[in-house]
Image 1 (cartoon, one colour):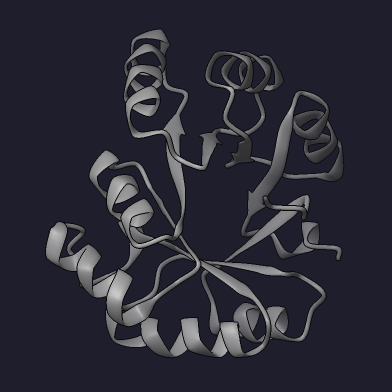
Image 2 (cartoon, helix red, strand yellow):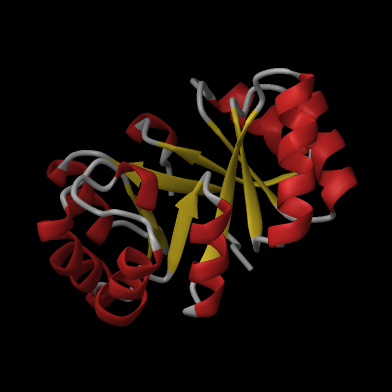
Length: 180
């Protein structure tokens, strides 16, 4: 169970290095290359962090069965984040925390994703954008799966609103919201 309200998502090495020295227990890796992935995951884990990898954004990583085998057997992150059901299923197979991303585009997309998530049974659902408290409450109640709110959250008030609506945590690349 994630017991930290802010999940810092890093795009830059400067932010990664900052998080290694922080009180954060988690690091979410965004926008990196597959050639750097093993080093970053190991370095983060050595610093006592749980490292989650956003598989859809890793350059050079194909998230088919073989790519996930490589990730699960060689890279060994603590968790994966993806919009793809197959990645979530493979992540669970390799005993990684599985976080399925869900975009709140329209009612058709929400209905489709709710059915998909009920089949894949991820450990968490990350809702984007995370600034829709009513949807956070509705989806948490509908699925019974912990919710992570992400995307477009710009300030502490929006963080608080998402948490009050039922989000377990907030994922953000905005370092000014990482106050640990």
